[in-house]
Image 1: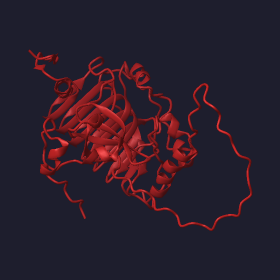
Image 2: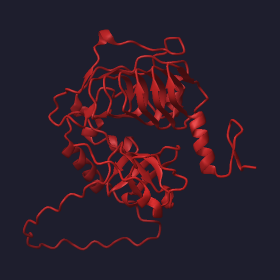
Image 3: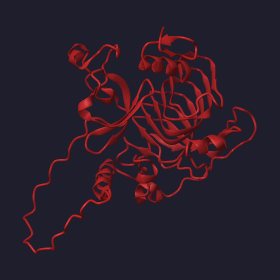
Image 4: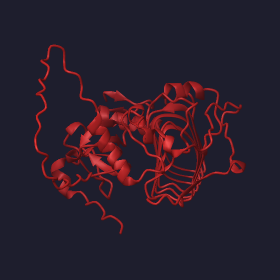
Length: 356
């Protein structure tokens, strides 16, 4: 007899096997075509959710979620009521999304429209033909779900888009959807519009430009479209350097501070080379969860200073500040993650060479 029983009665010997199966069973829509898919209030209740490899589907989630990953959708229409973390949208085309989330991050998306509520500035990368509009629509329980997800519907930064691939700010990859083309969606009926729909504002007033976004976003910085890549990297370094050290524990002796002594100014030294980050947000990777010997597939959620990373694993686990030594680029071919250990890594297919 198995020790862990899934909601459909299937039993498993290990918690990780059970958790992976239960996640795919209850918190995943995958490999669907021309279907109407739905999760109503009480079906998710703050868990992560995955949507992948769907075509021609209408997908409605009227519950609050943790992180949501959306991959390889075509001609789909997606409604997501409240996500307390990032929503990652990758490799999607000709889709319309109604999303309320802490932050939106897209990659390799084409000809997609986003009706968006976002607590921090949305980020796009390697994407084009993207349209943005404020979140239009709702459902009866959305106010409570947004509260559970720690989202304030009156504060919406849908318009503060940062494009990682537009160094000169040409705005060739995205635009604001004209008001005459905007269409609300109330998938459960009614007219419960609770998300604010402010007009585009001044990018100079965005939280990432005024130093207020780092703390309010739980350690995840985002940037407006007037920020260059160099400025974004520098902001991370400056934030780390200026963060106050933790207070001394009770009873610890105070550190004596020597009086200032005038000394000749040293000759300017050559600037130390900037340490290169091994990975970036949205990269697909394998990592050794909690230092285990087994590699598990996941996605870089946030790149942190010091070559450390927050990882969202495919089976729903999350891990924070993982050093690069425990991470590798995702293997090309599917790998049996329950049996591939560190010593067998050499036998795994090598990562594909980057596209020229």
